[in-house]
Length: 197
Ligand SMILES: [Zn+2]
Image 1 (cartoon, rainbow, N blue to C red):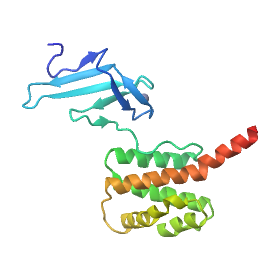
Image 2 (image 1 turned 180 degrees about the horizontal axis):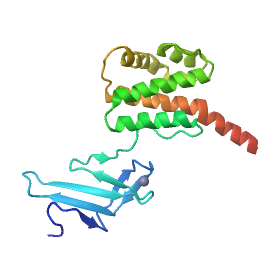
Image 3 (image 1 turned 120 degrees about the vertical axis):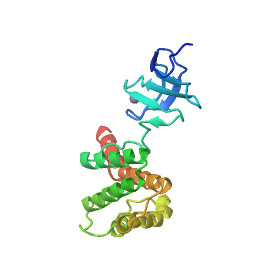
Image 4 (image 1 turned 135 degrees about the horizontal axis):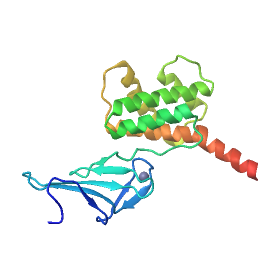
């Protein structure tokens, strides 16, 4: 047998595993890692740890092929102020551990913060801030059908004990991602390219 039952074994040339690294967010293919086979159990299980060829950090794949850490939903947005970027990263990370309600609460905070920075009054409710961003055209017409749903989901998250499901949380992450891009990333890119021209 090429492995020892119930012991981690270093594999230098494993069957290549392609995955999105939860640390550096690159899509990678790794062949280096550790494997543990539990063949004594009633249903044998196999566990893997692969090392990312980009950032060299390890990712654990459980016997059901679950990835830990899982890749974050959405993507990093550039030119976002540090505190807002850290909050958005926290919301994305919350989704990967199933903390959907927490992710939505953080996104609410980000949206309120962005609206205040763009001139909205402080200490208003969430709907006021979504309406404000909409009126000031920070929300694209294409995403308008989402807005009512977001108002509903995000409002319920604060005033009632309501568990947010994965679909709603992912929708709000995508919406926040788009908003941060429109408010920070695209204007910075335009400024950069016009200063080069
Ligand atoms: Zn990586």
